[in-house]
Length: 192
Image (cartoon, rainbow, N blue to C red; front, side, top):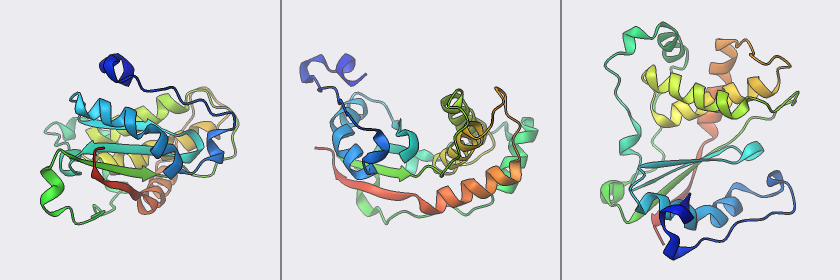
């Protein structure tokens, strides 16, 4: 995607002979940072990069201020209200952004870890990750909370043998709280 948006700055493909799980999130971020920066410089507000068994990177310019998405129609999503009430984790302050919160020359990258899983199948994990994120945003959670829920839903999906798994919302909420508490800042500095 970065090469399509910026053909004058061709970003080389990353070919890893080993599994992604053998690389730390820091190393993966270092490889991916040029492409992430191109996407953000071209106007994309937030970039989510799935790292498989290493979790998800959530990146933006400046800081986390735009990550709260207000939902006026929250009452029309009854299951969303359930997710919101179960996931009653207070919003974490990942760092004091000070003046740089609105400084678009800064890159903010947060690593949200994956949960250990006993994998039955991988089919549908990405779709369920996205579904968990979107339903949680619809419930009024911020992007970091919503991504934590998405990671928990993806784990439940890979551990199920069913094509359309049934979810235990309390287990999803417990897992999401753990993921949320383990999130950490990888980068808060200049874009380049």
